Length: 111
Image (cartoon, rainbow, N blue to C red; front, side, top):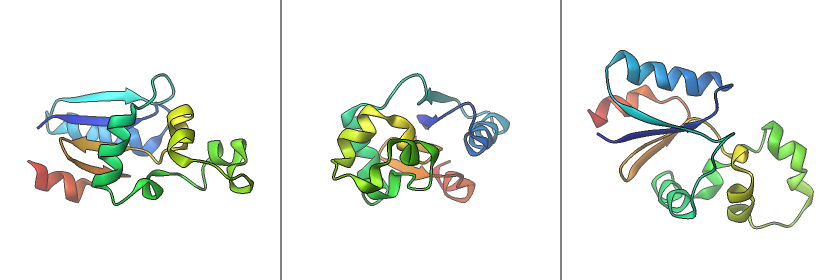
């Protein structure tokens, strides 16, 4: 397994995902979206795995409200690349598979 967790240090769900993998001694790479964004290729792969880019956007999140995107016509992919905090977290990726949110029942099947 090659696990990547995309999230933020402040996100409780991201911390739960980290704890899940630590408790099972499964190595993972943490990508802090507050410090480092996500590449266009990673975004495309994750979006394909979760059924589209719309499933990645946190429409109720602080960043979406702060940017006031609901009143603007925009290219959501470009907005995510510029503002990675628009993403729901955690995003957990294992190769071509990915989940959004805390989903230990799916992660168990990856082992």
